[in-house]
Image (tube, rainbow, N blue to C red; front, side, top):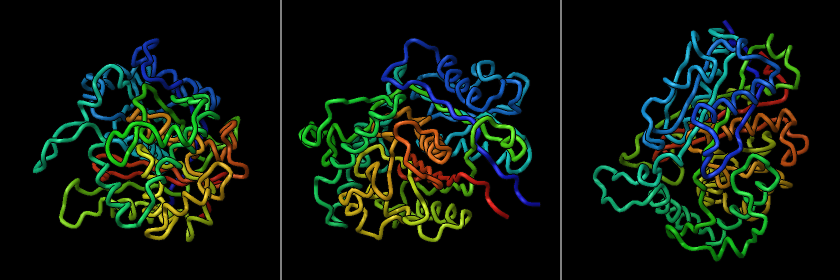
Length: 388
């Protein structure tokens, strides 16, 4: 039996900020879910199941918060599933929800991911010692900075590449009313002169810590036909993982990332990502990961990712816009950051991305990764349903 085509008919996100003290955790998720349902033209009663995801519980200091969120999300008396794959969880959550529609288990599913980091200490949570390694880390940047150095040595990338990415994404965020950071006075020189946190990663080349949530309504072909706005159609989706540490692990271009992208492209019939994909929402928590992932995802040859960035191709008006929303560098509620990438990709092909819309975008890739570059989730969405 063929799979049911999956359509994204509703998208909602919260206003993101360092601390959303105006709402409880339940109020935060309901803000995003309500906007997604409004976009889809549906009521809470139209939802058959809820699939939610978040980062580790100690990021908020609340164990199993999904137990108290069922009522806020209209899930009382309905199936509610929780997904967890570290920082990639927002993407993985969307894919689990999509699988329920594709398998015709449920016709309409609400999927949501969230984080309220302000109510705990995420820096402490991200500073746990890795087994068999000196406990010298201070947040995620301390773990990933050596990987960036390895990329620079491998490719000969100049030291200023990361600043170009950060400057681009922070300027893009000014066009996104939901973005956490709106730095109206941003300049390339300010990025380059910001304090060094984890050599070679500077303060302005890092993601913020955000409170926020993102929600999507996924449905089948019949549900898409009733939607008030043009849907985004899922053409491919995959998850892959690998251990944090193993002999031969490539921290610069993880095998799981390459294999995940290849599977998505196979499903979607993509043979040349650079030519066939119009826009990319990529998980870039530290600016250097744009050129690194450009290679890992097949948009650039090995050693050429930084050249693609420096050419201006990834700018909003380039031939391969990357993170027109401002990306993780501008908004980072960790549990929701991956779903934001998926949702922003869907907004682009629906033509509903507002001031950061890429003209003529028909196919978009949403990308998420998490853990020690060990969990990957991606989907490719388009403005027309898949054939076959």
